[in-house]
Image 1: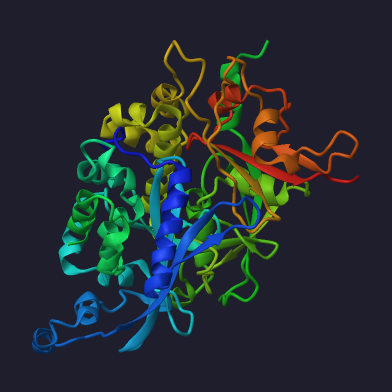
Image 2 (image 1 turned 30 degrees about the vertical axis):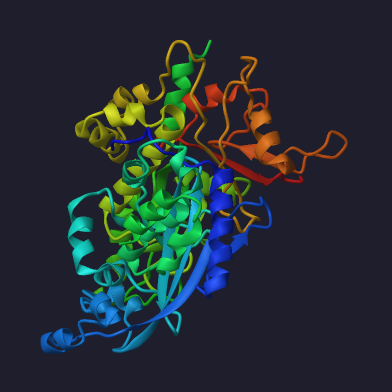
Length: 229
Length: 275
């Protein structure tokens, strides 16, 4: 794993970027909030949203509705392979509740994206179903490496099973984007940059208006928009 | 005089006598006898219970068998925690053998991670080792190792081979001559009474003046409620591998000698027995 040197994020900075992030989210009604844990005062960003999941879409229908983002995202959902995955079975055209959390890893000094999904009756989606809902172009990338993989892990504050997008390559690509004088990038919101890149892999998209969060220098807005495109 | 290396062996070969009983609502074709096993403290439940699974599956119909999971007095046991940690945290002051209930149905999705194969255990184990090295050495030592060295750590654990494991693990326990210890200590503190599963923070083993930080220093900094004020009675015990180390023990020494194979110090804060 290369790139352990390079841009790291201190916890205080993380909290500040999250605060700015939430402020903007509130302005545009994007649904993010900051949750503080009562005992230690640390916390995380949280957002819940609902998506419609269509299953078994015939190929011609897929083409007709190719501009329907949800259908593209969930067109690859497969039948569960065996009974042990029965817990995650949703009927066709189910509404799925997605919950996304952004936590700070003090060990790696990067943000980490945790998420889980369940049907409205509470049945959680399995890893295979989550996998199946990943956009086709990202699936190849995920299958290639151990680096960008999705695994099930215990949420370090809630203690419940969540899926986690492996943070291994975070420092590498963040360094690549933020290379150059740190002076330029002092105002770039690391969280927006990072989330706009990793979020779409698991169905989480940021409206473009987040890119306008640091209007002081045009270079920063360019960088953020580049990350979002 | 006991050598420090003897501590490594004592930690590795620690065992907990356990009695596995099938959950009464599981549907069986014959009566299920309990199964007794000495569990390695340093391993993981799903890694060492193949025989337990086979034993109970013999009296059950195939269609009644789904993913195995374990429970102690109503609490689902997290297979991704080392066995010794689970015992210290939940059952250390109760009579042996440790009584664990075995389930094959109604997997508690909200409490437990799935463990469909040994690969999942290996991935989890290696992820812990990597995180520990990120803290100790900015990942330099683990990244310099070859894939076969990583594999040897896992095989050593899986096959209970102390020498094979430590041939590689000793490199993860070294530090530059100019330093007096690791960059940060990999540790997690657990209390069964909290919603938060564990406390983990950055903590340096050496103070700015060069003194070695102790276990007591760590607890004072990260979990002060574990060390009660001098006037009060000590209501809790601080337990690692079934013992209460002296609070004056240097945390660097504890990290080198009493970490689990995942290179973390897993510390339990439990109620002190009142007898």
